[in-house]
Each structure stands twice: as structure tokens, then as C-alpha cells.
Length: 635
Image (cartoon, rainbow, N blue to C red; front, top):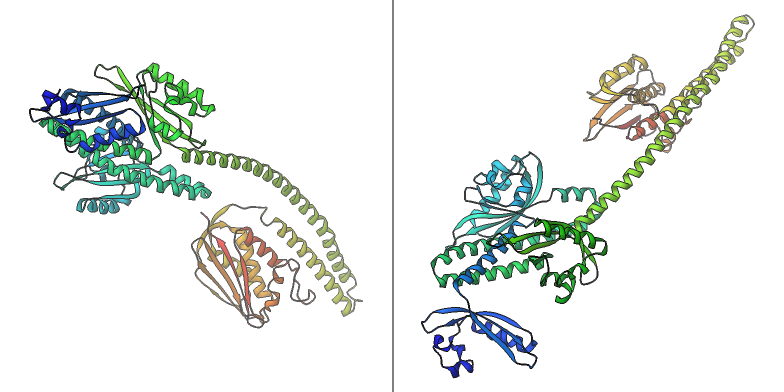
């Protein structure tokens, strides 16, 4: 070999060939040898030697330490065909890793038309590669609501190099609206001119829905998003570099051996960067031989802590969760027998002893004769997704149980309400019957003894009938109070202005002055609203000290409810009694002075609160009173 190198045999034996090394490879060769001597471990290294004809050729050197502590070194020249085969293998692995990525990979030209569309993009948006290539983004996946923002990002990418990350809504081929996370990177040629844009896209619709349903897990999901964003930003930058290196490799391979050497160097750097990305994103790349047996899996060992001897063959199964081991073995054997896609999920034990879920995909790599050369696969960490699914399942089971309990409770409550309605009806009938008899009897006695009755006796008879009527009103009020919230009525379109006109005709004397603001037409139960206004307006008339009082009825509209107010210029109510007036059987005047059951405002308060509203009183003694209540809008 020394003749080919142009050096003497003595120079060769004393490592004089160092002067024939390519300057860029000298330090790397010496470092590899020094590390091997220090660690006493075998090594492999490639470098270029200058031959006698003035041309550099690639050499492959490997060495092992024999039992007698002597290094056995083998140095083999590499032919152009070998370099081409290695280049093809590296390129095939890189293409597979990009195509198997869970992210959609899309390239756009300067007209914002698709020029590249991988299988993940097809899974996200529904368009095949042939359907997407050559079409403008606005006609494919951009809704009107996101058009302005997307055009702003696009202009920014064309004006300067660098990447962007943003989230927006997109539309799929079948018309669904989804939420996607985009990572964009300007593509430049060797002169620095922007020639297009590369995009990585991830469908995060399910993630967004999960965030809404599981508020308690929001902090954990936020960390996951931040972590994923960092991973994708790194992947975006690496994707751009891989594409540039791939193009350069094809052009340089057609030129000469010197350009091929530069291409191999660029691809080796790209592969090292991609391996760093895999480590950073908690993904495990693995390979096996054609029979599915493992020779070594460095990334697997780095995660699990297993030794090379422990993972060899089928030993890697020891890092699989015992409950998943048989299923994993069966799925792997089926893929090997059918030579088909290996797609499964299982839990892997980390070096700290904890288990995490991974999604696993593997495909056979074919040689030129279409026979399987090896298997290449990827394990992606999906622990967060599994945790979210488990939390949703538990929540669904809890809701199903609570729904069943609620249904049983509602059935029992409906039965109790029916029994209470029957009891109230029978009780009111049995109580009112003797009261009517007493009233009629007192009237007959007064008519029969009209000639002998004194004025005092007639007054007592009137008081007797007044008490009877009050008792009957009290029974009716109690019956009405007990039915509030239990007896529902159908909702309908109610004109509040027409409703007030009917109530005013029934309760307000002509001498009273009314000021009624324009009222809305709402969808609600008419009877409860009518009861509230009737009680408030009749109270304003009944307790007014004059026969020509003033009543104002107004309304204010809010986003989800209306606030109605009934105001008068009567005696007013001392703030000390504001809470008392809403209590059942509570009156501010003696019942002998004013026939009053003390139930009306209690019924009003119960109706308003049952409808989801609130009632309040604003009043000072001698300054009138304002009763305001809220009423929810219905759909």
C-alpha cells in the first residue's frame, strides 16, 4: 500500500502516513485512536488518504484489542459504489423518518401553492398528495376567519429568513373545522434567496377539547404544549437543513468524487442533528435484522438502561410492562410473518423504574431485490394522551353514575310532589267548606234578625265574615305558595306590555297615574311572571295612602337577563323591615286595619328565585318603594 501512497515502508511502519491524511480528518482519526487506547474499546473511523496520483481516497479503519493486549488494525479502501450504497441507505432512513413523523410536512412555493405533502398531512386534512400539489393554501385548508392572519404570517416569511409558530383554525376536505399548530421555516438557496416555505403542522383539536373538559389538568397540558413546541421548532429547523443537504447531495453526486465527499459529510452532520432531535423529543428509533432480531438499539438502551447484551435478540422485551409483553410479542410475530406494518402501543420501563406509554410503528426496509433487508421503527411517548383519556373515562363514569342517581331522585321527587298536590287539594277543600258555611250562616242570621240586631252586632258579623274571607285567602295563598316551582307551565312568546295592560285593568283604579316604559317580548312561562307583577302592582295600590298615587314600571336589559322595577310614591318601608316583608305571614300593618294574608311577597320571592332571578327592595320610610327583580332570558 505504501507504493500507492508515495511513502516509504519505514514511514508507514512509524505511522508516517499521517502526512498523507486529509487535513480535515487528521484530528478526528487521532482522537478516535486515543479514545480507544484510553477506554480499551474497539473503534471504527473513516478518513481520506492522499495517494501517489495526487487524489484523496476514502479509507475505512477498524481495530480491536486482542487478548494479548495487541491492537489488530484493518484499513480498507472504499469504492465509489460502496459510497453510493451507503448514501442510499442513509437517504432511505432519513426519508422514512420524515414520512413516519406524526407531524404533517408541507412545502410551499412562492405562490403559496403546495409542492410537497406527506402522509401525516393527508391524515390531518383529508387531501391526498395528488389532490394537494399545485393548489393554493386558501383553496385547500384556510377558512375565511383565519385568512387575514395567515396572509400576514406568509408575508413575514417571504420578507426575511427564519421560522414562525402560530395556531389557527383550518378546514378539512370533508368541511370539518379543526385547530392546528403550525411551524414554518423559509427555504433559501445557496445564494440566500428565499425559494419557498417548509411547514410542520399538528392537529391539536382533540387537545383543545380535552383542555376544556379537564380544567384540573390544564397546568400539566400547558407544560406538554411548551415541550412539544420546542420539539417542533427544532424539527422545523432540521427539516429545512435535511432538504437542502439532500438536494446538494444529488447535484454533487452527478459531478465527481470530490463533490460526493462533501455530500457525505453534509448527510453525516444532518443525521447527527436528527439523532439529537430524537433524544430531545423523547422518541426512540430502533432497527432489527430481517428476522426481527435486535443487534443493538442505542436509543432504547439510553432510555431503559439495559445493556447491549440485555437488548440483543428478543431481550428488549424485558423492558416492556409484564401486562403488555405477550400482546407485544404476538403483534411483532404477526408483522414478521406477514411482512406488514407493525403498529401497536405498550408501556416501556425507563431507567428509573417508571413506566410510560409509547405508540410504536415499524416498517420493513427492502433491498434492491425486494427482499427485507432490515426493520426500522419509532417509539413515540404518548403518556400524556393516555392520562387524559383515562381522566375523561373516569369523569364519564362518574357522570353516568350521578345521572342514574339523579334520575332516581327525580322520580321519587315527582311522586312526592304528586302526593303533596293531592294532600294540598284535599286539605284546602276540607278547610274551605266549613268556612263558606260559616260565612253563609252569618249572612242568613243577619238577614233573619235584621230588625233586632244592633249596629254593634252587625259590625261583629262583618268582622266575622271578614275573618272567614281572610282565612279562605290564606288557604288559597298557602296552596299557591306550595305549588311554586313544582307545577310547571309551557313556555311561550309573552308580550310583557300586553301582560301589564291586563293586570292594570284588574287591579289599578282609574285615579292612579301610571308611567310604563316600553316592554320587551320574551320567551318564558306566562303564569309565574303574571303572578309576580300582579302581587307587586296590587300591593302598590292596596298600601298607598292616597287614591291618586303614582306607579312607574321600567325595565333594563342585560346580556342574559332583564331587570324589571315597580316603583310607587306611597308610605315607603323602613330599611329595618326590608327582609321581613318577604317572609311568609309577615305584615307591617295590623290585619284588623288592612285585610292582608302576608303571603303575597313571599310568593313573589319564591317565584323569582325559582326562575333563577333575584328580588330586592329599595325604600325609605315616607319616600315610596321600588321593588326590582331579575328574569332570565330563555331560548
